Image 1 (cartoon, rainbow, N blue to C red):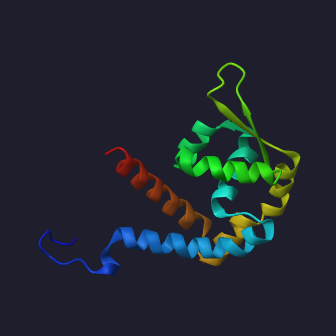
Image 2 (image 1 turned 120 degrees about the vertical axis):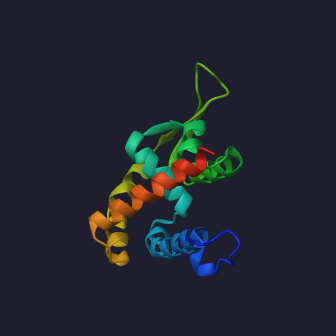
Amino acid sequence: MVQKDQFVSLEEHLCFSIYACSRAILRLYRPYLDDLNLTYPQYLVLVVLWEHEESTVKHLGELLDLDSGTLTPMLKRMESAGLLKRTRAKEDERVVVIRITDKGKALQQEALCIPDSLIQSAGMTDEEMSTLNSAIKKLMKQVNAR
């Protein structure tokens, strides 16, 4: 543990380690996502829709930790590409509902290999990955609670 009055090197900054690791993982994703013509955030939207088939924009933003200013233009592009459909909720016109299309569903089969391929590329066991993911989720929950 570093004392409060000591200089902290770059390698000792947890934030930098997480940042650098995130960038490295995204580089591993890139070839797979390029084949699907998707960006990483678009892939995450589809992951949610593959699981639930529909979501409100608000709920999607909460799940992905993205604000509507980021999410709305991306969803418009995805709708133009035929991957999803945006509609207003009948009971409340302010609520936008996102539904996956058949074209969006079809990409799921092509994307099935992505998680396993990344785990293999990382050179970690399933147990190590699960432990790491749990620790990161715990950290994220504690940081967001402040």
